[in-house]
Image (cartoon, rainbow, N blue to C red; front, top):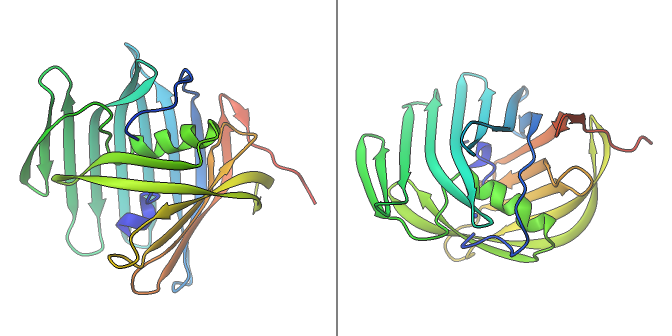
Length: 238
């Protein structure tokens, strides 16, 4: 559930075009194919003081809940992680991960399930939430193939993606024209599949995610409603 709920979605650097963040909020239905009930998820980006932004994600299903929060800023037209917090409750043992990005000391410090984390901080390194925003902006810029260096627990992982094309997504907000993106994995190492859809006319907001786990279980989130820069998302009607 963790990987699915996190929009298993990461960038060594953003495109040369200037990055202008736009606040948004979105709510989703969350469904496991094997379960008869639906959960919910919320995702938002808001401006804070001193040029900082907060990217927040919360999800719940049955007795499980996940919270993920990042603070970030735009530095030299690239997203720069500042802090990251992840908490999971339910589904057996809970989990908590914290990362702090010290750009002066060039270090990532924190803990992963009470295990200390200390990693070198290189330019372009992102946290597990901010890279999702980088992906959104790369898709908006027309990039077809993306690769991100991401702090994942107590190590750095490479996350790769590619654009598959355009597709219309049927949501509760109407029919949304979207760009379809696939997470690229080595099939000899993982059979997990992740497909994402980003709304072309709504600042490339995530409108759908579909994931198949290694055990064959399927998970999907679908947009219920959202706002981008204060304007309600509205798709075409049949």
